Image 1 (cartoon, rainbow, N blue to C red):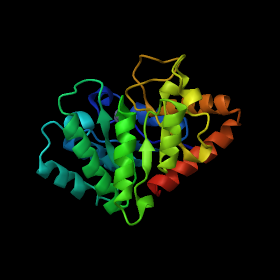
Image 2 (image 1 turned 90 degrees about the horizontal axis):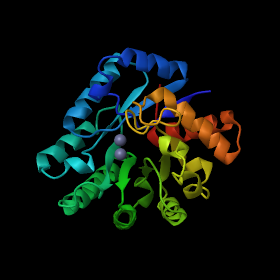
Image 3 (image 1 turned 120 degrees about the vertical axis):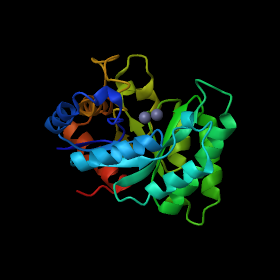
Image 4 (image 1 turned 45 degrees about the horizontal axis):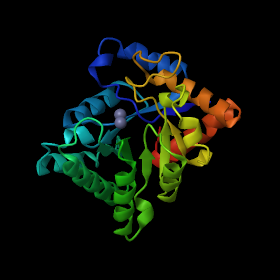
Length: 261
Ligand SMILES: [Zn+2]
Ligand SMILES: [Zn+2]
């Protein structure tokens, strides 16, 4: 059985000394694909370079919400052009981050709308980052879906999912998937309750490496091989055989992101 890590920043400096080993361990853990979300234009270039070095890697293109303060039209145009690269399988990660700095919320919202329109136009899934911004995310995506002739073209993943069961219901109503990672394994993280009503068909797995390592590696550098620990936890929470969790979540990822060989 195989797994997909749908969200790993393995182009970051944290991996520069031992990426060969990290990729080998991922393969040993039966991770067939790793999808690398962008932060800025440089990270898209770095991720595309890694696709030439290793098999089974794919890329997302976007400006991370924290990188939108000074973003120019030319930056969005560049993201748009990257979307035509066959290795680019999603627009992400975009979204809203209200945790750190509230001085450019409006820029973040505008960037989210631009990325949502790009994704619908290119017929690619949209991958969303969310910190303390669930309500705005849902209302903006509702509006953006409402603008479309074919609303189902606007689809994607709320990555590192967490929140209330009501928020989960809103995400389901929008037709989006949730990405589950290390926070599923955190004690008092509340994720098992939040996802109780989410059907397995709407779940994909991720690590968000190098961040959010699952238990028992919490606080250490995360890596794609540990997506297996997330799968094991989900099997426990849902009381399903591990093979079933792998089959369904991997199938979901392949279909949503259109992953070839
Ligand atoms: Zn994120
Ligand atoms: Zn991320």
